[in-house]
Length: 341
Image 1: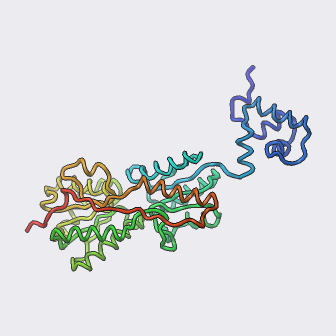
Image 2 (image 1 turned 90 degrees about the horizontal axis):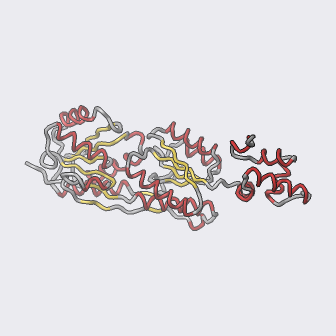
């Protein structure tokens, strides 16, 4: 009859049972500490071998209390920006012999907190997070109370420092300048979940600052949900209420592309009737007609950089830690044109 112990992954308790000793004795053998007779040591090692139990891996885990896992929480991986950043984190984790545990919050602070609690229960060694609002985050409060190392990706922290990301405010100022150079005086800002994304709020602040400095009208605001089936109705109502708008800044490229498609359905041409600028610089923006004018960011590099910061934190080299602001650039595209009078 086949040994039943082979039907599940062996544990330290299984080793102790087969060796006929207590768990504490197995722990002393694993850690090579304390008094253990040669006979008992031999029994423990034999039992471990029979069960296919990796003494060395467990020993390292018990001695260091490390699981060699990194937790990661991002709003979504349907957005190419987040998936690219996660790939960067994953690559650095693999290079350092670690595994990545990923959870998505769907832009929901309650889900963020649940995700962090779950990852803590998995005994991750550290975390990388993008949260809805870093200034008011129960998830970050929990991590700080537990003393678990973490770094922020895309967010500015409670002290307004950026762990790794883009200066959203400054990037949005560039957007306002690009519209102004083409003669646009009345702009709209269309954002996903504005009240649940501090990045979107920072972009709005930057756009408002540019409009004020350039003597443009204050931008009108439309907030929509991700993948909203009501975008056509919402956009139609928005433009009816603000017929003076000639340019729209979308809070990300996916939304910008959806707006362009919706404008076509409404019988409006881009950029002849309305110009569009996005944010992120995803590749698809170069494949469409017209090409998408946007702010290009570098999420893969951000992911690698923030993973490096976490490694420094774990290795107690935080004295050399400094936040990393990855640059951005404005990419012209056919979706931005001069105002038609």
